[in-house]
Length: 249
Image 1: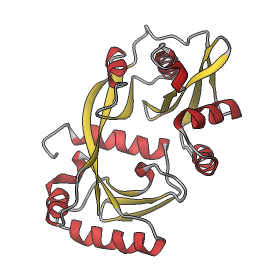
Image 2 (image 1 turned 90 degrees about the horizontal axis):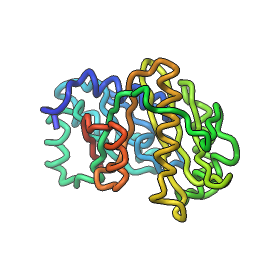
Image 3 (image 1 turned 180 degrees about the vertical axis):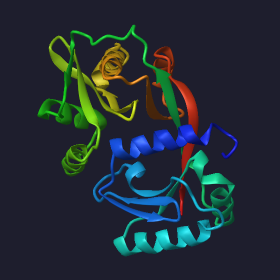
């Protein structure tokens, strides 16, 4: 994965994402970040992520990460982005680690054609309707919902929470975080009984308009490569910048 996009773009998006969805505990090891978020199923905030890895030290890094994970009673997962380089993949191949859940990081310019939809509520904080609706649509249980609420309070950027309404009833949800000239989009979900009706599109375009008004020139999001929602994202101008995968450590 080392012959892909410019690493400065990867670095900018990864750093933005780490502030827009922050882990409460981060251990830095040889240019990698080992992130721990008890109670969360999100692997972006649980596992080993490359930032600016030191060459020739991945085996040492992984062994230390595994010890720290073992101490906490959690599995050690490695997130392989283009920043990881060939060394990490080679070592994980040697250990027989499978490649899991390819995810695309997609980027779009923020066009002036986007506007906040009159039937989309955009709020500066996650009210109960947004948090409960997003959690229910995603099948998130109460304990994890409480973790999500706590993480959202720790986000280092200005945020917006979009709720798309159908006949006054909340049916689709999304979150945006603006900072450092970028708009990150997260938690995009539609209630199962309201899918394929255009509600996620309205939530997304509203957030993209919100971000553009604040000076963001482009937005990014992260989506599993086999997710049908990628067709919608493409219509909105998103194009794949790079991919990452997860590998057991």
